[in-house]
Each structure stands twice: as C-alpha cells, then as structure tokens.
Image (cartoon, rainbow, N blue to C red):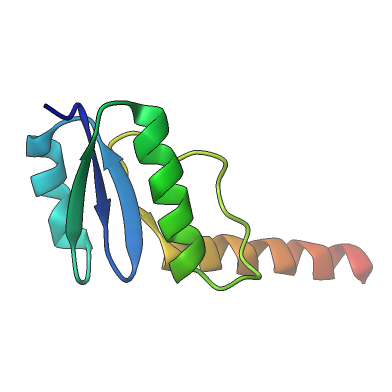
Length: 92
C-alpha cells in the first residue's frame, strides 16, 4: 500500500503523506490526477518532473516539494517576478 501520494494537475503539484490529505488537496488542481508511491523520494522525483513539464522553462523550480503543500506554477511565477523586481532595483 502506498505511503505517499503525488497529486498533479495542469496547474500544480503536491506530495501528500496520506490518501486522506491527497483528497483534501484536489480542490486546488485543474485536471487532478493521483499516483501512490512507497517513498517520499520517489513521489518527489515524479512531482518535480511533472512540475518541469507544466512550468515555463524560465522559472526556477524548487529542489524538493514540501510534504502536504501545493506548489502552483502561478506561485513560482510570482516568485520569479518578485526576484526580477529586486534585480532591477539593484541595477538602478
């Protein structure tokens, strides 16, 4: 029986520590899909691969997915734009 669940969609990805948590997270996803894994490392690797597929190539991806939290492409874009604003401020 899987111990970790990858929750993925067109807009986001998450690794959930239980089936119950995975079900609660599904409301944040467009086109939600689930897959069970025996280890966090396996679920994390598959989740990061999915995130790389759905996120624009200029966005910096996290090194790992926080357990039980949704990582949305839109939040990565906001972090990118906030970082770009800081760089512009340094240049001026």
